[in-house]
Amino acid sequence: MNYPFETEFDTYRLLVMRRNACELLLIAEGHRFSPPSVRIPRWERVAQQLTTAVKDHWGLEAYCLFTPALTHSQAWPSWFRYQVMESCRPNDNPPAGFSWVAAALAV
View 1: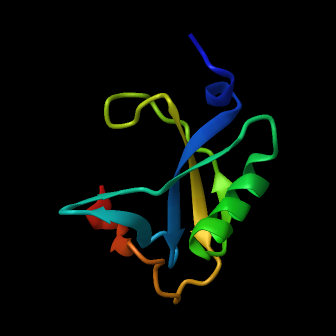
View 2: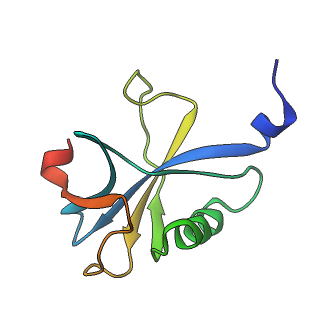
């Protein structure tokens, strides 16, 4: 059964990059890292909602680049949507609880 509050929002995992995609913004969870995620209202402009959410939640200025085409698996569950973004300020410190990680290490 779907509840209205579940279907009126989408959860996006954000692949926020900087420095020509050499670094990726990740949340440190113990010895693991994961991409940040936000819930935004469905049926509204995705890019506008995501840039606003990133700024409001973490004080990070970023813009949307594209929605990647992914094959869903356990590593990439289908209930998440993904968006590739780029930081507008490549030299800023990461928000609290986040780290800029070399993209080569994040794979």
